[in-house]
Length: 176
Image (cartoon, rainbow, N blue to C red; front, side):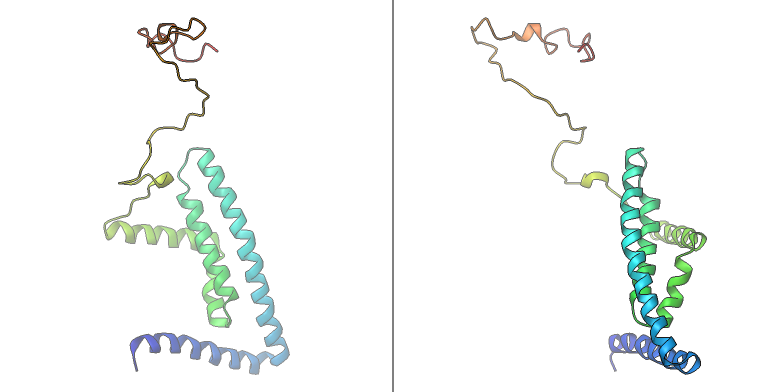
């Protein structure tokens, strides 16, 4: 039997076995009710944590901090929610510890240590990695009028009258 088929078959058979054992222990009606309730809780958690993760990432970015920790916590909570939605009690047993913040912090530290041990990783904020196109500086929103420096129209400003003239260091734009 190919290894991939075995890797897919063993967890499914384990989930079915645990489901039957729980059904014998609690009864079919209670087992099915518990099964559906856990799936609903997982769906609610997935929706709530997704929105909360977006807010945490936005607030971290607005403070000028990298959103790595909120993203990692959110990713683990989404994983826990997906495991709760996935049918079976074994997957739920793996999901429950991930709902606890100390366990998530431990997993994040462990994954970080593994990444460092294997050579680390690089995060390029704003998709400005090597080979990215576009300016690397801040975006400045402005209105402009293009002026021909050789124009003879006296109503247009001359370059010497602007802050882009020869005396560039004395004007910073805060004189508005």
